[in-house]
Image (cartoon, rainbow, N blue to C red; front, side, top):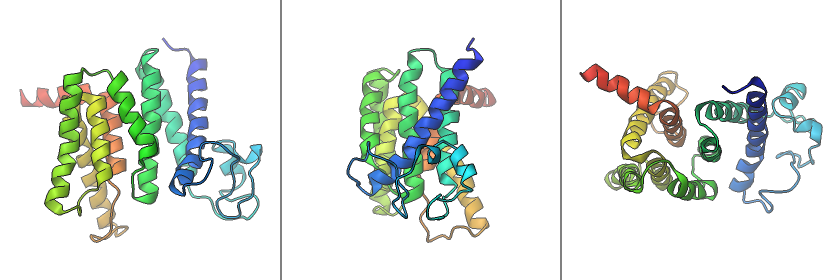
Length: 249
């Protein structure tokens, strides 16, 4: 049984990595030099941020969601990244034994990056995604046969949509997410993850359209739904599949 102290430490570690993601995501998108290192700065006034400005969640609250220097408003996405990373890291720690949970921490980092990168910019970055695919291929729990079939299903599912719609429905980045899903989950759970992703995506998309926050001609990022479906499958996939099969019996 995990004691409370390690859980708190993992949660704090997640906050720290989440804070790193808030810096990494825009740096990769803007192709800044020294994207993985270098002092953090305000994206508007470019002032170098100090330690007291970089405390996850707390600095956001103390500074009232504004830059301390130029008073420009800081979006809710920043604490959302930090908090979601902390929560996912904690769930991962509670779900998988050592050293397996280290693998899933790395995968979780890549998935969270992909979620928020696509949400923010409506595109997929390969800088984190491609290494995570390689990691899943080399160290993932599924056997090679299941991985390869899973990749064929995950990548092929989106490739077919691209061909049919001539790139209007999904993008090439979704193929790479499908590849990660297949390499990580194997073929059976990849199917489950795709179904879960599209159910969630349909519900949220209908809600956005009904509330007029989105229109039919506006693009909606698919990556966050695929990442959410992947996370649900990682943590609860077998239970969901067994529940569904029991309904059919």
